[in-house]
Image 1 (cartoon, rainbow, N blue to C red):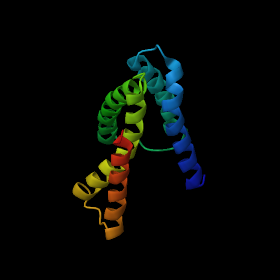
Image 2 (cartoon, one colour; image 1 turned 45 degrees about the vertical axis):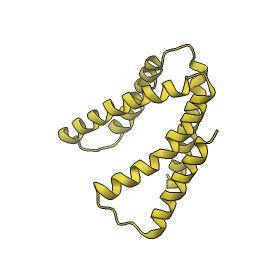
Image 3 (cartoon, rainbow, N blue to C red; image 1 turned 90 degrees about the horizontal axis):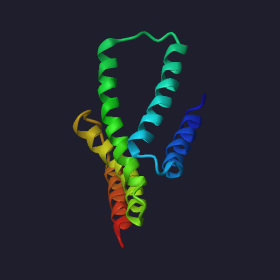
Length: 136
């Protein structure tokens, strides 16, 4: 499959579920997270067992730890979405816009990614955009 297909599926999936989760009210965020996790697990397990990939225990344990962090983050994200007021609607795009900033900083600090002036400029544009989203 073309990487563009993965990109489109990803942005549609991640873009739609915060909107669709509002229809899950009054289901508590923890139950919504559990339902999402069950389906994600089933799809992931199906994809992993479909191929001939080798299993590695240590990376799998690291992935489990990431899953714990992701579960906690998903619950807090679902609570923001289900806030029920204009505040929750304002916070969700800010969270989404902040993710590239966090990934950029981690890439530079942890992975020693090489960055150019235009990368810093793009980061500045994102930060300014987050500031504009916070204006009342």
